Length: 186
Image 1 (tube, rainbow, N blue to C red):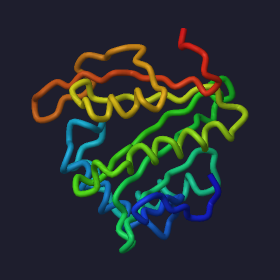
Image 2: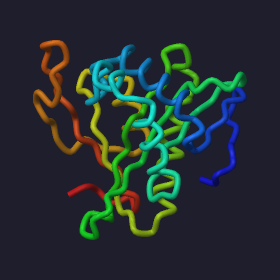
Image 3: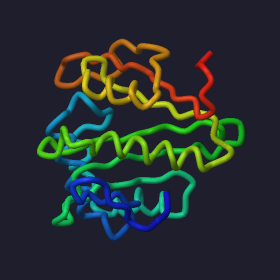
Image 4: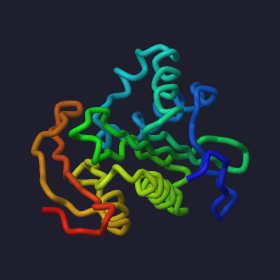
């Protein structure tokens, strides 16, 4: 994916997020954590207690790469979706990446925004010749997200019971993997 904005159907623009997006990204992330608390490892309370400078630092870390944080913006410029690609710095782990922070505002679901975000993250990953695979976790009960990831080529390889506990309720997470060279996970 180039650094220039790219429009998708419905005048949605997908582009990399940078430090200039810190306030919007923080507000978006807090909304996502409040709307779907069981979908994330982070909690609204923890993230809300962090200063804006923590969001600035997070975005700054992805500006030069490797990896990326991307956002989907509606025609009025509102951030309505985001996804990230984290690539480890350690040499022996540099072949794998993690899709993280995938979220679309409830008011924007059902329009293909999530699919385009996942596909863009996979395009970024495929452009990196050192990457062989992209992993993610999804809450076991989150069927729409699970279907989306499966349709984008991710396969479940494991289940972690009680991966997170949200307000006293244990949530299992499914571990999914997308092989960038289309091999079957071992």
